[in-house]
Amino acid sequence: MNEMNKKLLKNIENSISETVNEKKIGIAFSGGVDSTLISKICHDMDYDITLLTIGFPDSHDILFAKEVNAFLKYPHEILEIDSKTFPNITSKIYKTIKTENLSWNENCIAFYYVSKLANSLELDTVVTANGIDELFCGYNAYREAFSGGESQILEVMNSKLDNELKMMKAVNQISSEFGVKILQPLLTTNFIEYAKTIPISEKIRDSEDLYRKHIIRKLARQIKVPEISCTKRKKALQYGSKIHKVLLKTRYTS
Image (cartoon, rainbow, N blue to C red; front, top):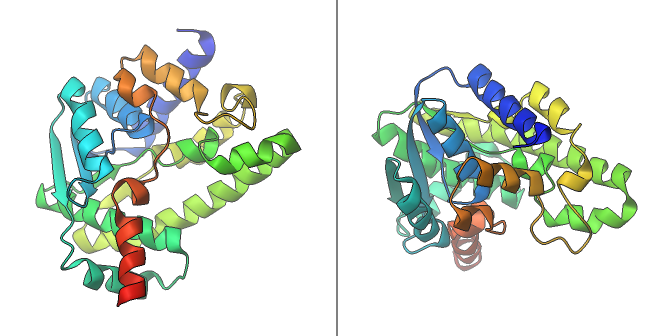
């Protein structure tokens, strides 16, 4: 492992240690490179972890999370969303967070179910990989910004980080109903400052770069994250769980 990757791993470990005080934790898990990397690091740090996956039956996230964990063999719990009660839950969340922002509503809905699952397992702390997409150019918006140079990429990054930090406050408002804290070790001030020092070239190569997050994928391979996870292209939680699809259908047919 080269020095840059060693430093990245150390900074992730430090951020987890400083943020996550409970030893018994849930981890929001889709099987993608971000959540699998965090799961593997927490496991290697001797946290007592349970992977938590939510989604509609046969959704991408449920199927892929099972496939990835066939290699990891960590404790893994799945909650399938009931389409009958879904409209009432979404309506309640919409009234609670009071925003028209579709992404915020979808994420709060997803973490409602993650928190419900955690609570049923007597877990009061859930760790997420939020922050990786923002800090390591995971979104397509970074491809679009690439031609504008580093200053435009950083502009997108700061905007994405600002949105994510505010959204996770709304998420915790929702999770508090179950007495569950949703923690994002990779959105701490120290980690954000460190991650911004990593060269952009380690994150995104050009405007055609469909994979991005290269240093994250490299580190994942080096700590033995399953290859199918390392090479998986991004699929956001609301899409992988089918929440986006069903929510739009519910909104326009109710």
